[in-house]
Amino acid sequence: MKVAEIKISYANTNPTKVKIISSKDVYDLILDHWDSNTIELMEEVKIILLNNANVVLGVHELSKGGITQCTVDLKIILSIALKCLASSIIIVHNHPSGTLLPSNNDISITDKIKKACELVEIKLLDHLIISSIGYRSMVDNGDV
Image (tube, rainbow, N blue to C red; front, side, top):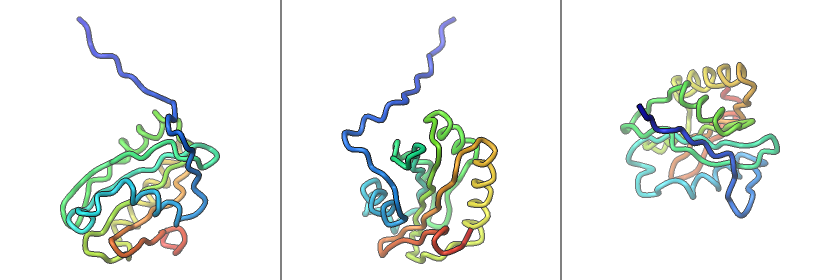
């Protein structure tokens, strides 16, 4: 009986290498991967995967949800990061309401992601909350 072979690519085929130095770099990068027509419609979560030099390996769309929440599955986050051999990740999600303050759930899930990443020697560099008016870095603001 034949089954499909799982294929994984480790090549960064981007012609230019994007290095993340600040949370502003993250915000500028992620806006190119977000549909501005839906940023105030429904919540979405994306993962930015980086190598050891903080060069972006890629952006992965983790989930789309309703107007107030999204599913964030630790197993999926870790499996994606491990398959890419990412050294670090950044989580980004939007608040359709426009508020940039993290909810208790945002703080809780960020803490869980950070602890899970530490077990497999991957760094959670930041968690950004974005809206149509700007962003909030949970690291820069001491939320986590």
